[in-house]
Amino acid sequence: MFVVGIAILCFVVNAEYLVPPPTFEADKYTVWAKERVIDKSSGAVSRKAQIHVPLDADDTDSVNVIRLDLVSDSAFARGYAHGFLLMKEILEFTGPKLDKFYMDEVLNLDISQFPDPLQKIFRVIQVAGALAAPRVFKEAMSWVWEKEQKYVPQYMIDEMEGIATGLCAKIDLITPSTNEAGVPTIACNVTEWSHTIKQLNMLPELIRMACTAYGAWGKATASTANPGGLLQLRALDFGSGPFANYSIIMVHRGSS
Image 1 (cartoon, rainbow, N blue to C red):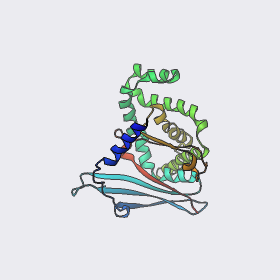
Image 2 (image 1 turned 90 degrees about the vertical axis):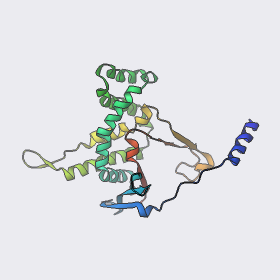
Image 3 (image 1 turned 45 degrees about the vertical axis):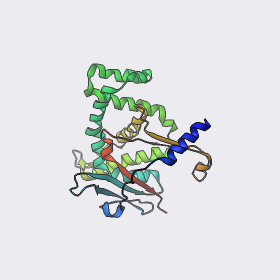
Image 4 (image 1 turned 180 degrees about the vertical axis):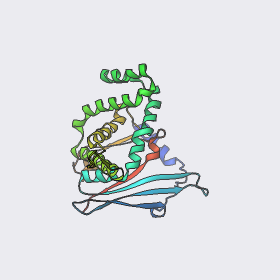
């Protein structure tokens, strides 16, 4: 074991590294939208920006990322701003973009890795074909959420429910509806969207996405809300599907 460690150390020391990529000043490539969301309890302002970094003179190759500054001491309020500011992107991503991903993904999915209840759900596709994939994936993710929700911290649930509420507030604002008597009604169902967002967060669990992960504990987490406890991070390094085209830099700030 000691010899292997020395060999690895020598390799690292003698490695030749490539020239690091350039560092860009964020302000030069960031355009803030005029739209804002104000936290009623504190007056804190959340906002959205588009980051566009051209990588060549003709701008045929570029990096495009959305930035969200979510400012509130409340997880629900930060989620509300998230859903309100990203209504268009959420509707695109959770609709046609993900539906196509489900139909493509199901062709390569080994359902034998799943527990029996999930295998039963996915067998529908063997009869109905790939067009049934969106419905089947959603049913499967709902099953996973039912098993996992008791382990999800309340602040995360509050934030997801806030996203659904903010999303519906924006939809009802731009597409108001009325009943037969002309009385304004709520067209967007917050409860349904809340469930959709929760189930979608189970997609990595369902198909066992791995990519990059690390854990920290002890002295490394001494200054966190859970001193010395385990802090786990997983980064999903998407290279295909719709995920890479909906990348977000999200900054959470307290209002004080």
